[in-house]
Length: 468
Ligand code: NAP
Image (cartoon, rainbow, N blue to C red; front, side):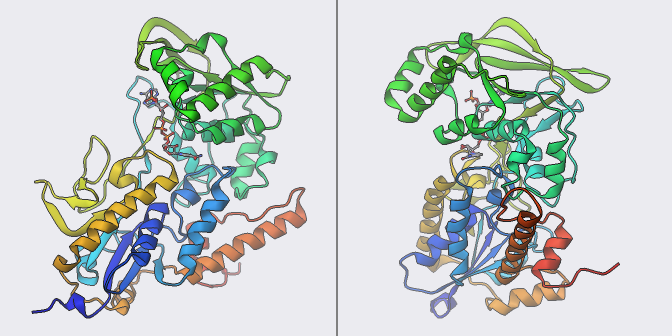
């Protein structure tokens, strides 16, 4: 008997409308295939773009280009965006099975990896992803952030650490050109910070920054970059990395030039870059962070480090750990708690016995872990979509494959949802806020983000604000 899939479009749900989900949808739409596809792209937020909207610093130099590219894909009209719908709460796996022939989870990695040192629980010790969510105007985090530290430590030598250090050390007025909401501007404006210390546990040739992001640091006005010559140690592996990897070479050059050029201009804020220091303990008094104890490290020849036993205490009143993100467990699917990913084989999701779960796929950070730049998720999506297409003939057909069936189900459950047209309305609204702020204020602003979820939904649904 011919499969019903031969006579109708393949119905695919993609959970997560961040770059990973959008790339998967785009690749599936454009793939060479002998059947039609019909894709619903879900997000738990009323707006699309995931980590681009809620995980990258607002002054990130590449953000606009990426948003433009994702917008172009969704604006074609062949992928249906359904926002403000949470998988595991509003829709269960059984619903997805009824409505779709296949599902791709692209839910990302939104938690912070733990440092596991004493003092991590103190007031003033934070995960980077939380403050990133705050300054990116995430609807589900508090509107205020305790910015009362004069001296701040950021642990980690990846781009997230750089983002956090840059945003927390910048003068708020210099972020006004970005889309930061007013509560974030006000919070940063009242910050008493004078010194932000970024700590890498390995050497300058082992940093995980990228060159553009590193160079960006020196563009902050009235912020001096402070480096320490004694941190500039290179072992055999470092020399090899500098020789063989252009990015490493460029960044080590940038750092060494900064030392030579003498960055002390007497600025009112300083951003210190420390290397070869590993966190041992967050020091506290009365339950609050008062310092950070670091142990000096020594390179071992193979780019690994060993503690020297020499301890240095830094007086800081806030510590942000930016040592990597960690995947969030997805309801009704297996979870590799060590790696923070959905167990999978090239994107085909596996069950607890290691067997493939038919029709269930994954892509992006929740598939391979939180490493790599946004563009790298394209490769992930290619692999996952390749497998989905290979499996086409053996997929179990949905029992309610019509596009209306989902809308009917959401309506029956009383679940409000946003659409691409709704996002366009919200997008236009944010641009209008930007235009109004430009007229009223000292700088040109392209847009200003709307934060409260209910406001986002209200604007996306075209509903007037209640008067009163
Ligand atoms: P990351 O690049 O993996 O960097 C994590 C950093 O934390 C590394 O320097 C690592 O040092 C350090 N670390 C890990 N465990 C530690 C510990 N116990 N103690 C001290 N240090 C520790 O992670 P990320 O910064 O979260 O970034 C994730 C991905 O997103 C990256 O690919 C990044 O490039 C990307 N991203 C890009 C941008 C951008 O383009 N602007 C912005 C944000 C994120 P070791 O190397 O020694 O392990």
